[in-house]
Length: 267
Image (cartoon, rainbow, N blue to C red):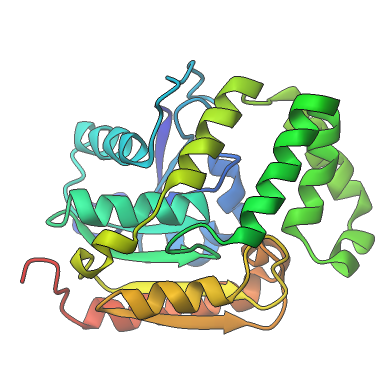
């Protein structure tokens, strides 16, 4: 697994692991690096089967495997305690890590995530599956921004969207890998074990996310014993990109607050 550490390099610095969504690659977090690097040791990684961690995934791939792979990669680098900042799928990886490695995970921020898959999100994923299987990679890549960004933002960033589309096609993780990861994501349901996640959790969402209704964050917070919700009015599913300044400020505020509060994970 490709893993890199940026920001503070001393082992005494608080460590944050940034876990991206279905795309799986570390580059998603570029808008956050300057804001986080001054204070934190920041871990970036390409998830198994994506980017620089190319590999054929097993057909029974599951969220627990994603968490175990990441925990093992961190252990190889001597990282024993860390927080997780995760976008959608990455947020669910963070919750799985909090369940399976409670002594190592200090806190989790879940960006536009969920407790269990919402029917609306399932419909969106099924549309994306249809595009990939029946039309092809190009159509899948062209549709990607529609699920990530607000319309007005897309209208003002046409060149960027064209570049992202070309990069997506050039470095595509492969149809089978994508479907394996998507199926694992759609199967994930934290309802039965949510009460066991005792670390501080932030569910940060955007009201205009067309992929994941913001009410999913409310449902997640209601199920967890030590969670809070922050709702942004605008920014779409990828508001950490479209409104990085506001997002970064809210994230840093929560990181400061949760760092001062003791975790209940070991209690």
